[in-house]
Image (cartoon, rainbow, N blue to C red; front, side, top):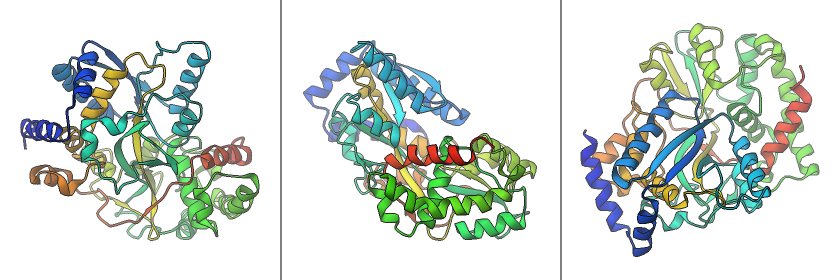
Length: 391
């Protein structure tokens, strides 16, 4: 299907959801602005998608978008904090950033976000409000960030070598013991590594509801005791005896393809299909989840309080919410990132593209587990590094 058709769909729906006088003013102000979009640059697929979106926004709205490729959003948060503390109140180096979780919490609590603005975007009317788009790791977004996509922790294996995968944390421990040196995970604070640790915690703690609240020392100690006992056992059977960890999920994919590991992980249920298509994994690779569910969330874009190009950032964020941009992003051959739009309200052509699947992608229904409150992330990472980081 040609995206020219989707362009017409997007423009029609955009008009229907209200290109108001205020929005017209923002669009006029945005013309000629340069938006420095700070976003993870570790995926060629994602980088290519951002480049496409930037080109479209330049052509249609006269807004220049420059992708500042980063490795850790926490470093961007520190940069914004430093700039504001130094008095750079309106000429910051970051106009828009890809963010969620503890990084959003730290920005919001520090008064470092512009807004609220997200609910005023014309394309906000297309968003599926049944998804967790109004909270971010249990922190209310309140219009200070705009949803971009959905994600869920997904595991990858090769049916030629692992026809029956582990379906829980308990199964994984038994699997690792039966396959010593063939299981690993990225070292926190790597995003995938931290998410894996949170997944284990959700399964192993006796009171998972406590994880939705702001962490306290007493609750942390009690809730995480089963986690550390589990990891103490698991690490003995990991790749290199848990003394060295995979550098990233991308490295795990390579190690899975080489047969060095038996399980890899991703936060994109469609990534295995892309890896098969690019011949980084064999055609026998498949995706799976745990029976009790895996962690899922929404990722967002936000505007720092000292951004130079606030209008241009809003125009770009609105385009990222359009039917065309969301449909292209969901296409497995492009990125395969889940949409935040209400699929049932979209034209049939867009629905079929979004729902398209491919061999290797997650084909089973896996329950989505809520992220712990953002405050748990830093606490977990600090304790993990204290216990295992110096090995």
